[in-house]
Length: 76
Length: 312
Image (cartoon, rainbow over all chains, first blue to last red):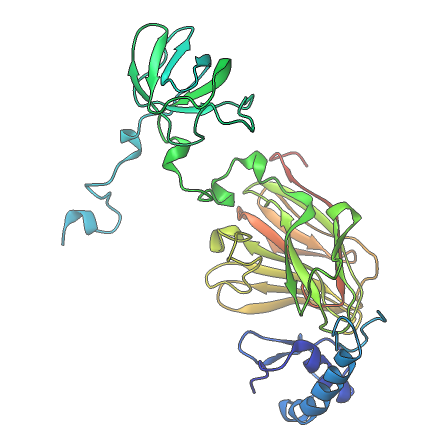
């Protein structure tokens, strides 16, 4: 599944909503890089959380001067 | 098929190394007169028509105007034993101006920025423990501070996959022995070094070329990474066509030094716990190093240098 339309910070938020706390990033082909972990959310589980993740990202970004919507961003 | 097109043969019309005159360089103090193309030196015996003329480092060019243009100036004729004519008149007067005269492949024959890392003077591309060529990632911008500790540490602490940056370690390893030591961060994102073969990315770091080329076809690429979320020490090797995880071991390191070195063609990496041999013999690749860009992350360089072969 191609996740390249999403900001990687939104993808990290979606993984967290799936209760996955480890690192995740985007490969150049738009697939998700789980960095060798055998147990991780499926593409469909991630896809199901993308909307909520994007909303959470946008909501946080709107309240900050630096527009940073990343999960666990330190206070400004 | 023309002989010149047969693979492995020298093109019959090509300029061979033998045909290129050896470069010569003459340094003389010269006297210039404003608006005059005539120049006086102590002796024109070592000069010849066509020589490129440049100011030497003790330049007397100033804000009121240059004695000579910085490019394209040549000797057009030798008048006598102490004077010659330039291709343009002097823009200022000056006495005993240190001047460089060159033949062969002169500066004027090279386009700007055509000298890549592997073609440069080795002393200019020495491996050194500080970050250069920073590029933003994940929305990083000038409002963030990514480089600290006098240029030796790159870090980003702006949330998971948040604003970050990558940078390149100054210089490259050259083809001989080297050592680089660093402390990867221990955060959610991957911290550490990515290592590429300059032969596969000769323009790395130059404008438009980026700082890394992950998994370049036909060329080695290593990743030495560490984090707290996966809590592993992760070493990955791309052999030019496929990737192999050489190590994915718990636990990650928090504050420990990692190192990579090559002695006599044997290349190894140590993650502070164990040593992995990357190549057992014959490694002569000219490696460059770049940081991971996934925030939050950090990588502090402790030392990095080339070694004289056999020094260790």
